Length: 444
Ligand code: 5AD
Ligand code: SF4
Image (tube, rainbow, N blue to C red; front, top):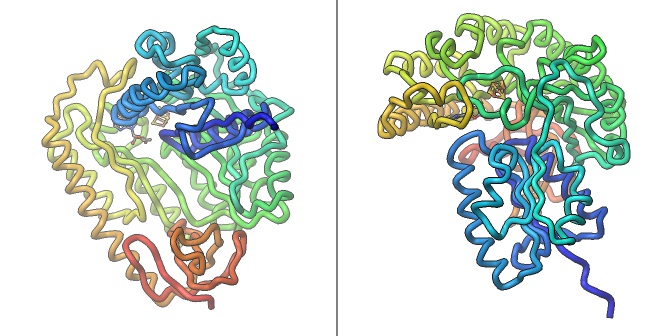
């Protein structure tokens, strides 16, 4: 009888960068002879890739660890690991609080998984959270050469990290503390990974980083990189996230307008529409500067779709401050707004301020904001009916495989009833209706 292949299960919380890291970890585990499973109770290794950007996801990690402790009682050989930002932040504490955990490692260490697993098998409980944070403006090939070709391709989309970490220290944000200072990836590595992904069938690439606009390596700026990537043969679409409004430059809007491959979509986190709050948040731009950049972009690209992040209930936020945020939503008319109630995070500057907005007020502001955005989005989605959109097919409907899913250039989801379509097809679709946030259409 052949021995059973060991299995792993990864639970991911948080942003696209974490999704990317989980993908890389699963590739490493497969390389070590493991097989993926969707069922934690069948796994020999369980990894939780954590997010600490807000309090909620962090709490979920600890309740999940409680459940896993019970699973481990019935299966003592199970290996449990905590990766990502909570791991980086809490380190040893996790081992102390949770007997069931065998390994804790920050986002800089996942390439050492084979070695970490080996040490755990020998009986060690491993913590790897060390990092040198004192060097600014670093350029590095932070994906080892032997993993370069195993890029993150899912269906027709490739996700490529161009930089990691952040030097901005927004007052509310834990990222510079968990992911460390900015490190930009060697441009040649980035371009090679994208070209390999295209050879493997990728049609769309996402350039990922905490603050992609501050990319700089050997004199190459984000503008230069985007310029090169947008001209790679065979690549149909380019997207990138996240951008910082203070670093967004109108020349980037020009490039987006000139290059058909760069999608008409931009995520530009605002956080607040009040200059006083923006200043307290250390965002280092005014609302006037933000709106000026948006107006320029809309002027260059009439069908641009914008999305943003908003925090409600930041310390000292008044009703007037909040109303200023609502006014920006009215003016910009985003396609999507990711809104959050402020929660203090360890080591951040805002954590030293009194968290003085009552939960009830935060909740009420959040609901008002969501309500306004629903109204705006409802009007926007209506205006799509009758238009023809270019749609990249990226999957099938969960319950009916005859219905295909795709995205417009502006990143709106579309359902098309046409069984003949394949993942990676770029087609023109006439929009005939919508259901919730989904557009519906027929092939043109
Ligand atoms: N409280 C609430 N929301 C936060 N975000 C980041 N830190 C906090 C916090 N302490 C939000 C911001 C950011 C998004 C990823 O999460 O809006 O852009
Ligand atoms: Fe956090 Fe600000 Fe950096 Fe974004 S730019 S990761 S919000 S510190």
